[in-house]
Image 1: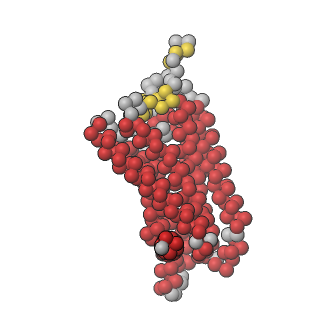
Image 2: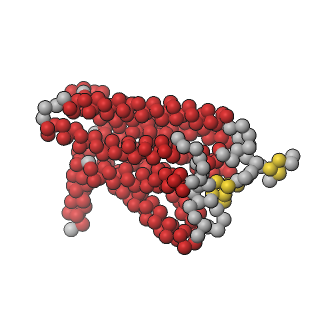
Length: 311
Protein backbone atom coordinates (compact mmCIF):
# COMPACT_ATOMS: atom_id res chain seq x y z
CA UNK A 1 0.00 0.00 0.00
CA UNK A 2 1.22 3.53 -0.85
CA UNK A 3 0.40 6.71 1.05
CA UNK A 4 1.88 10.02 -0.14
CA UNK A 5 4.32 8.13 -2.39
CA UNK A 6 5.59 6.13 0.63
CA UNK A 7 5.10 2.40 0.74
CA UNK A 8 3.53 0.98 3.90
CA UNK A 9 3.98 -2.70 4.63
CA UNK A 10 0.70 -4.43 5.54
CA UNK A 11 1.93 -8.03 5.39
CA UNK A 12 5.20 -9.81 6.07
CA UNK A 13 6.54 -12.93 4.37
CA UNK A 14 8.05 -15.64 6.56
CA UNK A 15 10.80 -17.28 4.50
CA UNK A 16 10.70 -20.25 6.87
CA UNK A 17 13.07 -23.19 7.01
CA UNK A 18 12.95 -24.45 3.43
CA UNK A 19 11.15 -23.96 0.11
CA UNK A 20 11.83 -27.54 -0.98
CA UNK A 21 8.57 -29.59 -0.86
CA UNK A 22 10.57 -32.80 -0.35
CA UNK A 23 11.98 -31.33 2.86
CA UNK A 24 8.87 -29.46 3.99
CA UNK A 25 6.70 -32.57 4.40
CA UNK A 26 9.16 -34.46 6.66
CA UNK A 27 9.68 -31.23 8.66
CA UNK A 28 5.92 -30.87 9.03
CA UNK A 29 5.63 -34.42 10.40
CA UNK A 30 8.62 -33.92 12.72
CA UNK A 31 7.36 -30.66 14.24
CA UNK A 32 3.80 -31.95 14.50
CA UNK A 33 5.05 -34.94 16.51
CA UNK A 34 7.17 -32.63 18.72
CA UNK A 35 4.19 -30.32 19.29
CA UNK A 36 1.84 -33.17 20.20
CA UNK A 37 4.43 -34.66 22.55
CA UNK A 38 5.00 -31.24 24.13
CA UNK A 39 1.28 -30.85 24.68
CA UNK A 40 0.78 -34.36 26.11
CA UNK A 41 3.88 -34.45 28.36
CA UNK A 42 3.19 -31.02 29.88
CA UNK A 43 -0.45 -31.93 30.43
CA UNK A 44 0.75 -35.11 32.12
CA UNK A 45 2.92 -33.03 34.47
CA UNK A 46 -0.07 -30.80 35.25
CA UNK A 47 -2.30 -33.83 35.88
CA UNK A 48 0.21 -35.54 38.18
CA UNK A 49 0.86 -32.38 40.22
CA UNK A 50 -2.84 -31.58 40.58
CA UNK A 51 -3.85 -35.11 41.64
CA UNK A 52 -0.92 -36.30 43.78
CA UNK A 53 -1.01 -35.16 47.41
CA UNK A 54 2.77 -35.61 47.77
CA UNK A 55 3.41 -32.82 45.23
CA UNK A 56 1.39 -30.10 46.94
CA UNK A 57 4.50 -28.06 47.76
CA UNK A 58 5.80 -24.68 46.51
CA UNK A 59 8.32 -26.33 44.17
CA UNK A 60 5.60 -28.14 42.23
CA UNK A 61 3.23 -25.18 42.43
CA UNK A 62 5.85 -23.27 40.40
CA UNK A 63 6.48 -26.26 38.12
CA UNK A 64 2.78 -26.36 37.30
CA UNK A 65 2.94 -22.77 36.04
CA UNK A 66 6.13 -23.54 34.11
CA UNK A 67 4.45 -26.48 32.35
CA UNK A 68 1.45 -24.36 31.43
CA UNK A 69 3.77 -21.68 30.08
CA UNK A 70 5.67 -24.23 27.99
CA UNK A 71 2.42 -25.39 26.36
CA UNK A 72 1.43 -21.77 25.75
CA UNK A 73 4.81 -20.84 24.26
CA UNK A 74 4.85 -23.86 21.97
CA UNK A 75 1.29 -23.05 20.83
CA UNK A 76 2.36 -19.51 19.90
CA UNK A 77 5.11 -20.74 17.56
CA UNK A 78 4.43 -24.24 16.22
CA UNK A 79 0.92 -23.98 14.66
CA UNK A 80 2.03 -21.10 12.41
CA UNK A 81 5.24 -22.97 11.59
CA UNK A 82 3.22 -26.04 10.56
CA UNK A 83 0.85 -23.91 8.47
CA UNK A 84 3.72 -22.26 6.58
CA UNK A 85 5.41 -25.58 5.86
CA UNK A 86 2.37 -26.67 3.82
CA UNK A 87 1.33 -23.26 2.50
CA UNK A 88 2.36 -21.80 -0.83
CA UNK A 89 1.87 -18.23 0.39
CA UNK A 90 3.80 -17.74 3.63
CA UNK A 91 2.38 -14.32 4.41
CA UNK A 92 1.43 -13.05 7.85
CA UNK A 93 -0.54 -9.88 8.50
CA UNK A 94 0.94 -6.94 10.36
CA UNK A 95 -1.40 -7.50 13.32
CA UNK A 96 -0.82 -11.25 13.43
CA UNK A 97 2.96 -10.79 13.30
CA UNK A 98 3.01 -8.25 16.11
CA UNK A 99 0.67 -10.38 18.20
CA UNK A 100 3.08 -13.29 17.86
CA UNK A 101 6.04 -11.06 18.78
CA UNK A 102 4.15 -9.85 21.85
CA UNK A 103 3.33 -13.39 23.00
CA UNK A 104 6.89 -14.62 22.39
CA UNK A 105 8.31 -11.79 24.53
CA UNK A 106 5.69 -12.42 27.21
CA UNK A 107 6.48 -16.15 27.34
CA UNK A 108 10.26 -15.64 27.49
CA UNK A 109 10.12 -12.91 30.14
CA UNK A 110 7.64 -14.79 32.33
CA UNK A 111 9.66 -18.02 32.11
CA UNK A 112 12.87 -16.20 33.08
CA UNK A 113 11.10 -14.84 36.18
CA UNK A 114 9.56 -18.23 37.03
CA UNK A 115 12.91 -20.01 36.80
CA UNK A 116 14.43 -17.43 39.17
CA UNK A 117 11.53 -17.88 41.58
CA UNK A 118 12.04 -21.65 41.49
CA UNK A 119 15.76 -21.18 42.25
CA UNK A 120 14.85 -18.92 45.19
CA UNK A 121 12.44 -21.59 46.42
CA UNK A 122 15.23 -24.21 46.35
CA UNK A 123 17.53 -21.76 48.18
CA UNK A 124 14.99 -21.35 50.99
CA UNK A 125 14.38 -25.12 51.18
CA UNK A 126 18.09 -26.03 51.36
CA UNK A 127 19.60 -23.10 53.27
CA UNK A 128 16.71 -22.29 55.65
CA UNK A 129 14.74 -25.53 56.06
CA UNK A 130 13.29 -24.61 59.48
CA UNK A 131 11.82 -21.36 58.14
CA UNK A 132 10.87 -22.74 54.74
CA UNK A 133 7.16 -23.23 55.47
CA UNK A 134 6.88 -19.63 56.65
CA UNK A 135 9.11 -18.06 53.99
CA UNK A 136 7.34 -19.87 51.13
CA UNK A 137 3.75 -19.93 52.32
CA UNK A 138 0.82 -19.97 49.91
CA UNK A 139 0.45 -16.20 49.86
CA UNK A 140 4.14 -15.64 49.06
CA UNK A 141 4.12 -18.27 46.30
CA UNK A 142 1.00 -16.80 44.70
CA UNK A 143 2.53 -13.33 44.88
CA UNK A 144 5.79 -14.47 43.26
CA UNK A 145 3.94 -16.20 40.42
CA UNK A 146 1.64 -13.21 39.96
CA UNK A 147 4.63 -10.86 39.83
CA UNK A 148 6.26 -13.09 37.18
CA UNK A 149 3.18 -12.91 34.97
CA UNK A 150 2.83 -9.14 35.46
CA UNK A 151 6.50 -8.57 34.57
CA UNK A 152 6.03 -10.75 31.47
CA UNK A 153 2.96 -8.78 30.34
CA UNK A 154 4.62 -5.41 31.01
CA UNK A 155 7.81 -6.36 29.17
CA UNK A 156 5.81 -7.63 26.23
CA UNK A 157 3.61 -4.52 25.95
CA UNK A 158 6.49 -2.05 26.21
CA UNK A 159 8.68 -3.73 23.58
CA UNK A 160 5.81 -4.48 21.18
CA UNK A 161 4.30 -0.98 21.34
CA UNK A 162 7.68 0.61 20.70
CA UNK A 163 8.23 -1.70 17.74
CA UNK A 164 4.75 -0.90 16.38
CA UNK A 165 5.71 2.79 16.24
CA UNK A 166 8.39 2.00 13.66
CA UNK A 167 7.71 2.68 9.99
CA UNK A 168 7.90 -0.36 7.70
CA UNK A 169 8.21 0.56 4.03
CA UNK A 170 9.81 -2.59 2.61
CA UNK A 171 11.28 -5.06 2.13
CA UNK A 172 8.88 -7.32 4.03
CA UNK A 173 10.83 -10.61 4.01
CA UNK A 174 11.47 -12.08 7.47
CA UNK A 175 14.39 -14.54 7.48
CA UNK A 176 12.78 -16.79 10.05
CA UNK A 177 9.96 -19.29 10.57
CA UNK A 178 8.24 -17.01 13.11
CA UNK A 179 7.78 -13.34 13.88
CA UNK A 180 10.44 -12.44 16.42
CA UNK A 181 11.60 -9.00 17.45
CA UNK A 182 15.22 -8.98 16.10
CA UNK A 183 14.52 -9.98 12.46
CA UNK A 184 11.41 -7.77 12.24
CA UNK A 185 13.28 -4.77 13.65
CA UNK A 186 15.80 -5.13 10.81
CA UNK A 187 12.99 -4.27 8.37
CA UNK A 188 12.19 -0.91 9.98
CA UNK A 189 12.77 2.13 7.75
CA UNK A 190 12.63 4.63 10.62
CA UNK A 191 15.20 5.13 13.37
CA UNK A 192 15.00 2.03 15.63
CA UNK A 193 16.76 3.73 18.56
CA UNK A 194 13.80 3.50 20.97
CA UNK A 195 13.24 -0.20 20.26
CA UNK A 196 16.95 -1.03 20.54
CA UNK A 197 17.17 0.89 23.83
CA UNK A 198 14.12 -1.00 25.13
CA UNK A 199 15.57 -4.37 24.10
CA UNK A 200 18.91 -3.63 25.75
CA UNK A 201 17.19 -2.39 28.91
CA UNK A 202 15.07 -5.56 29.03
CA UNK A 203 18.14 -7.75 28.59
CA UNK A 204 20.10 -5.95 31.30
CA UNK A 205 17.32 -5.53 33.87
CA UNK A 206 15.33 -8.71 33.28
CA UNK A 207 17.87 -11.04 31.67
CA UNK A 208 20.90 -10.35 33.82
CA UNK A 209 18.76 -9.53 36.88
CA UNK A 210 17.14 -12.97 36.90
CA UNK A 211 20.48 -14.59 36.05
CA UNK A 212 22.14 -12.94 39.07
CA UNK A 213 19.32 -14.21 41.31
CA UNK A 214 19.76 -17.70 39.87
CA UNK A 215 23.53 -17.73 40.30
CA UNK A 216 23.27 -16.30 43.81
CA UNK A 217 20.71 -18.90 44.86
CA UNK A 218 22.68 -21.82 43.45
CA UNK A 219 25.96 -20.55 44.89
CA UNK A 220 24.43 -20.61 48.37
CA UNK A 221 22.86 -24.03 47.70
CA UNK A 222 26.22 -25.51 46.62
CA UNK A 223 28.02 -23.99 49.63
CA UNK A 224 25.39 -25.39 51.98
CA UNK A 225 25.52 -28.83 50.34
CA UNK A 226 29.32 -28.99 50.56
CA UNK A 227 29.11 -28.10 54.25
CA UNK A 228 26.97 -31.16 55.01
CA UNK A 229 28.91 -34.15 56.33
CA UNK A 230 26.38 -36.72 55.19
CA UNK A 231 26.96 -37.98 51.65
CA UNK A 232 23.29 -38.96 51.49
CA UNK A 233 22.26 -35.41 52.45
CA UNK A 234 24.44 -33.88 49.74
CA UNK A 235 23.14 -36.38 47.20
CA UNK A 236 19.52 -35.53 48.07
CA UNK A 237 20.16 -31.79 47.64
CA UNK A 238 21.89 -32.19 44.28
CA UNK A 239 19.24 -34.66 43.10
CA UNK A 240 16.43 -32.25 43.98
CA UNK A 241 18.09 -29.26 42.32
CA UNK A 242 19.69 -30.94 39.29
CA UNK A 243 16.54 -31.04 37.15
CA UNK A 244 15.84 -27.33 37.65
CA UNK A 245 19.49 -26.43 37.08
CA UNK A 246 19.48 -28.34 33.77
CA UNK A 247 16.30 -26.56 32.64
CA UNK A 248 17.86 -23.19 33.54
CA UNK A 249 21.06 -24.03 31.63
CA UNK A 250 19.13 -24.94 28.47
CA UNK A 251 16.89 -21.86 28.71
CA UNK A 252 19.64 -19.31 29.27
CA UNK A 253 22.18 -21.05 27.05
CA UNK A 254 19.97 -21.05 23.96
CA UNK A 255 18.44 -17.66 24.82
CA UNK A 256 21.79 -15.90 25.17
CA UNK A 257 23.10 -17.27 21.88
CA UNK A 258 19.82 -16.40 20.14
CA UNK A 259 19.32 -12.83 21.34
CA UNK A 260 22.85 -11.67 22.10
CA UNK A 261 24.00 -12.16 18.50
CA UNK A 262 22.98 -9.87 15.60
CA UNK A 263 19.96 -11.06 13.60
CA UNK A 264 21.15 -12.38 10.24
CA UNK A 265 18.80 -15.20 9.24
CA UNK A 266 21.70 -17.68 9.22
CA UNK A 267 21.23 -21.44 9.56
CA UNK A 268 22.73 -21.37 13.07
CA UNK A 269 20.27 -18.66 14.09
CA UNK A 270 17.36 -20.72 12.77
CA UNK A 271 18.57 -23.81 14.64
CA UNK A 272 18.90 -21.83 17.89
CA UNK A 273 15.41 -20.40 17.43
CA UNK A 274 14.00 -23.89 16.88
CA UNK A 275 15.79 -25.23 19.94
CA UNK A 276 14.65 -22.28 22.05
CA UNK A 277 11.00 -22.15 20.97
CA UNK A 278 10.13 -25.68 19.79
CA UNK A 279 12.41 -28.21 21.48
CA UNK A 280 12.86 -26.62 24.94
CA UNK A 281 9.12 -26.75 25.86
CA UNK A 282 9.33 -30.52 25.32
CA UNK A 283 12.65 -30.99 27.11
CA UNK A 284 11.57 -29.19 30.30
CA UNK A 285 8.87 -31.68 31.40
CA UNK A 286 10.93 -34.66 30.20
CA UNK A 287 13.83 -33.54 32.40
CA UNK A 288 11.57 -33.41 35.46
CA UNK A 289 10.00 -36.79 34.64
CA UNK A 290 13.36 -38.50 34.07
CA UNK A 291 15.52 -36.83 36.75
CA UNK A 292 13.18 -35.85 39.57
CA UNK A 293 12.53 -38.83 41.87
CA UNK A 294 9.39 -37.32 43.40
CA UNK A 295 7.80 -36.69 40.00
CA UNK A 296 8.71 -40.20 38.83
CA UNK A 297 7.19 -41.72 41.99
CA UNK A 298 4.04 -39.60 41.61
CA UNK A 299 3.74 -40.61 37.96
CA UNK A 300 3.95 -44.30 38.94
CA UNK A 301 1.25 -43.79 41.58
CA UNK A 302 -0.99 -42.02 39.05
CA UNK A 303 -0.55 -44.78 36.48
CA UNK A 304 -1.17 -47.44 39.15
CA UNK A 305 -4.43 -45.74 40.20
CA UNK A 306 -5.53 -45.50 36.57
CA UNK A 307 -4.79 -49.20 35.95
CA UNK A 308 -6.79 -50.20 39.06
CA UNK A 309 -9.73 -48.10 37.87
CA UNK A 310 -9.48 -49.65 34.41
CA UNK A 311 -9.57 -53.21 35.67
